[in-house]
Amino acid sequence: MRARLLTAGVLALTAAGCAENPAPLEARRPTLNTATATPPPVMMQGFYWDSPNESGSGEWWDFVAARVPELAKAGFTHLWLPPAQKSHNNPSMGYDPYDFYDLGEFNQKMGVETWFGSRAEHAGLITTVHAHGMKAIADVVYNHKSGGGLEYNPNTGTSTYTSFTPLSGAYQLHYNNFHPSTYEQSDQGTFGDMPDLAHVNPDTWNVVLSYQKWLKNTVGYDGWRYDYVKGFHPWVVRDLQRNVGGWGVGEFWDGNKALVNQWLASIEYTASAFDFPLFYAIKSMCSDNSGTGGYDMRSLWGSGVLWDHPFNAVTFVENHDTDVHSPVVNDKMMCYAVVLTHEGKPTVFWRDWYNYNLARSGTPHGIERLVWVYQNLAHGTSSLLYADPDVYVMQRNGTPGLVVMIIDNVRSWKRQTVKTKWPNTTLKAYAWNSEKDRTQPATVKTDGSGNVTLSAAPRGYAVFAP
Ligand code: ZN
Ligand code: CA
Image (cartoon, rainbow, N blue to C red):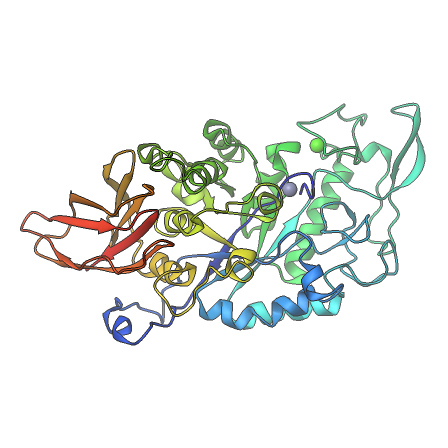
């Protein structure tokens, strides 16, 4: 949530390989057991802030559905959609939820349809997502509600906007479902002045639990992106995961890795967390092109949650909130080279793929090729092979594995000798980019101990593998 205020989360996944340029690549691709293997997950965040301005009001679900086939082909396995329910404001991105069960069906608030479309159009999108082998991730907002009517509140002795009797008729909420409640005065946080749900009231909990079961069993969602989890008890996410199932990721927006790790422990690892600590590190790396490259590449290794909890870290470069408030504008592909070669589950931001034209389909220089790299090469554990203030070389130790070299120096190509896991092997670049120089880094041969000298362009990266 946090519309114009802050936030949002991301997640995306894909499947499938990308097309090779001329042809040679296809031949060199490792063989996958595609009949049985589930492709490593890559999530697409299927919206950006105010994205219906691009499609037209009420047309976003159809706009996305038309692009699902190409996203599936590019390898995305998960599609994260914005909060689908009818909300308070007109228009709304969904982070001020009013009627959980109105997906564009009842004439209330902004009208029958949401800003994204009708319930039928939403259902069509979910069907299309599943028809292409992808999973649909719902953005669920459980910290607060918005748009209730005024009622006398004995808990405060005043009148509060806590009377919710929405047209779906599926549930009602009143003052004691919110803080301060007779069950609890407050929880971890509030969002603005919106009524703050008191999940310790069993009636409140049942509304939330029933809603998420409905999203899964009736609407067809496969997983969850939990908005603003800093605002409520961790057990809410833990118990929803255990009672409803499905893949989940929480928006615990904090650059302090210890705090994100603590949240993961508190939900007993039933879901993942967006890797905000990594986000801040790579944002700094991409943004700081001052001097010779101001970021110290030695700081990258270990910066994110993915180094501590690789199976519970959802990595990303940008989301609907960060894009609005302070987007990465320099050398953004360096950031994607990190999230799509390292451990963790990567997310690609819609606007980076489509509007900022970083997919660069059919070339080795964009996100599309890196998604292929993530799904076909980036396997196994990780080793740091070398780092200095300008150069970072990391190896994925699985099969086939890869070595990625990232250079933040502004001025010159860098060469570095490292010891890889492959003796007497020819290594070539599968993906590379620099906005300054797109010359393909040289193909090289390792010695009997795996030693080899690799090179990459300034403000660039190269991914090597046999
Ligand atoms: Zn948020
Ligand atoms: Ca709260």
